[in-house]
Every structure is written in C-alpha cells, then in structure tokens.
View 1 (cartoon, rainbow, N blue to C red):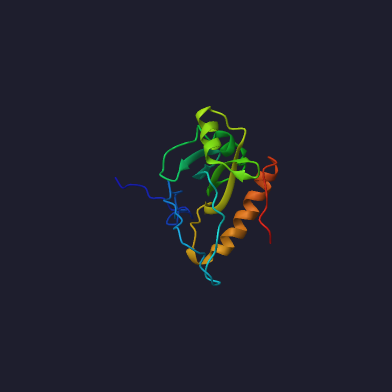
View 2 (view 1 turned 45 degrees about the vertical axis):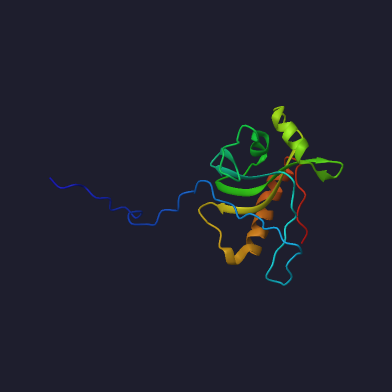
Length: 164
C-alpha cells in the first residue's frame, strides 16, 4: 500500500518564518561624548525598564532585557497595544515625575502592583508578520514602527509621535 502525498498547490510552498522568542537587545555603551557623522543614530536614554512586547495573534508577552517574563507587571501596557498579526516591539517602561523619568518611582509602582502611571516608549519594531529586521534599513524600520504604533497607541490616548 502506497502512502498518499499532498498534490495541492501549497505543497512545497515556503512557510512564513516562525515568530522568534526573546531577542537579545543591543544595549547602549557609555561614551564621554556623542559620536558624530551621518552613519550614527542617537536615542534618548530613559531611566526605566527595557522591555520587548511580543504580540502573537491576540496573545501578549512582555520580556525584560534579560528575557524574564514580566507580562503580569506590565499587563496594562501590553493590553493597550491593538496590533493584529505578529509583532515584537522594543521599548522602555518608565514613570514620569515632574517632566522626567524616575526609576525609583517606577520601582515603587511595580512593587505596589500599580500600573496606572507606567508609560511605554516604543523605539523599535523587531518583528512584524514574519519579517525580521534588516540592520541596513533601520530608518525604514523607524518609519514602519511609527506607522504601526501611532494608530494603536493613539486609540489608547498614549502616543507622542516621532517628528518627521
């Protein structure tokens, strides 16, 4: 008896890549002065927790920069992101006090189990519906991040769009 094979049009077609798990972030290196030149991009340093939010067809996970699952601690932030499909968003969770980020107040809010003062600054889209980032096209990724995040966060009243 012969085993039946699939002869449909999808046989042999490439499957989209699986969404990766935690992606180790590139961390900042302290320098005495900013590097100059058009090949360098600079980001504001926030005093908070670096996190990745993984959105996978309605399921949400939040990971610290060391890969710890902190979904419970940041469930309101993850819940505010209404993005269909798959996405991995890199950013920083902070508490703002008198116009500045305040790490000790962030720690106090988390220790107390409160989330209403937490703010998430998304600064990179690491994965979107099967597409991994190409390090040579970071400016296009920034634009894609802005187009993806702005409508999702604006609906929650939580967006401060990037200029440009």
